[in-house]
Image (tube, rainbow, N blue to C red):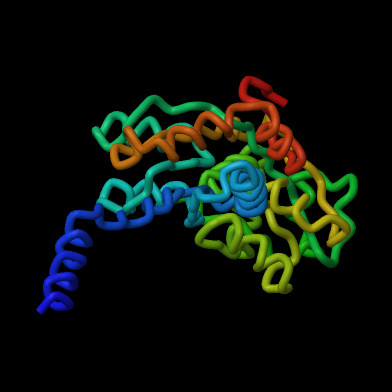
Length: 257
């Protein structure tokens, strides 16, 4: 009887003790990022997580216009890094943003080939048959594709090369076309070329031939008030992050060269 009473008292005392709380949920955000950021964003996330090991940042890459559509349709992204500042502004205008767009870089368009020496090549030269098929991103939703079309038109060769164009869904796929031989030349992002140094050769596309590739990011409505999303947004604007972007050929906001 005494043993039974002692057991009951122990059980009652245990019930009075505080229950162990669940471990705090790991901070997590998903970032929608333009395909030209594929390698640079990977380094940015890696550097950020070095100082914030508990943070989980997932990144989905794609053409900026397609990512915009996904966000407007409710895709669960907290941040949107676009290769064209017009797209984040559209989120604001459509009531889908949680803040003001912030310029973070100026992108550069180049002509790259795995098999042809591109040193000294001008855009107008691409009309020559020796350059074969030319890969560009889809101008309908990829900023680099739109600028590639502008450059080809400004050089006066759009009609001559149109039948030889191969279209990638985004600028990363466009690079793959040029690397695989599906196209002999690609009009692609310098950032993706610099991610694979020593492969092929490239020549810059003069910025006078197309609109600037001003790139901005914005918090989505879902990301507003999210501590991790807001902190990563601040980090991207600081000197260490800008140094990473510069290594991949991105100019700082305001640079028009």
